[in-house]
Image 1 (spheres, rainbow, N blue to C red):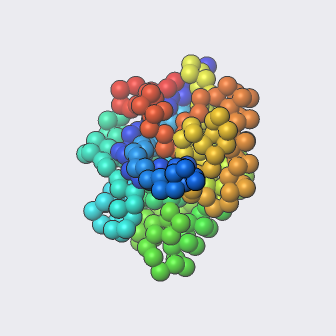
Image 2: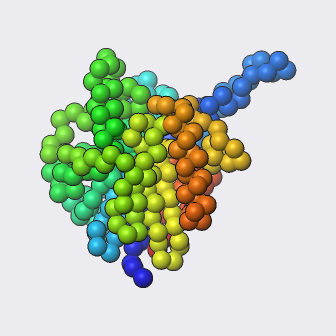
Image 3: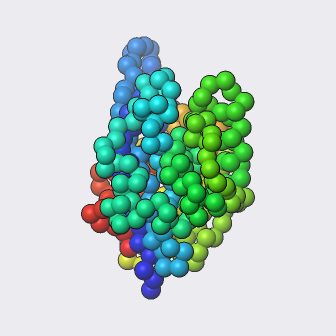
Length: 276
Ligand SMILES: [Zn+2]
């Protein structure tokens, strides 16, 4: 028996065209050649694991604190606007659990897209900020894309999320990695080169597998695999989804998808409660 707990920290909502999350959604046909685009809302969140010997582990850190004020360019704010209340800021969500960014012992970034790594600035100068876990391929891609393009945001990576950060360093992983006897980081390439999922085995609630954006929402995985429109490698993305289905069956795991509003509305959310 161990005392590991898992908290889901709501960080607001993003709105966008459904076709971003489901490739070729509303595809036109001979009967209907002008199907309209559809706009929808998806959640953004981080996960805090309170682990019996690794301490406070934060999985992802949301968008930049000034995303909609100045960090994201205007075009991005129109394509994927982010809506947050004061409570939806990462530091506020941590304070609801009597924590500050300095109390985080370990940070895992499932990938470095702007809605998952933008909060890195909270961890400048902290111990956890000096050894952030991410996949080596992800670190390379995230720093490569925005710095070879003239645009501020390239392939989902926001240059200002990484510019001028003080004392932020990474501890790369190169493959799926066992972090503790009850936590595994699973390499799920495809959405990006180095997307990782986090599999946690809890004493009461069983296995929980956070897929991050390897699966945006349930409709990407069931009843059959349907890709999202945001991928680095579509073949690898499909293989990763098959891997997720195997892991789900192996552990009878509860999957938590990257951006699934219907699922999110049924999750146990911090600060009211947590998984254990
Ligand atoms: Zn992403």
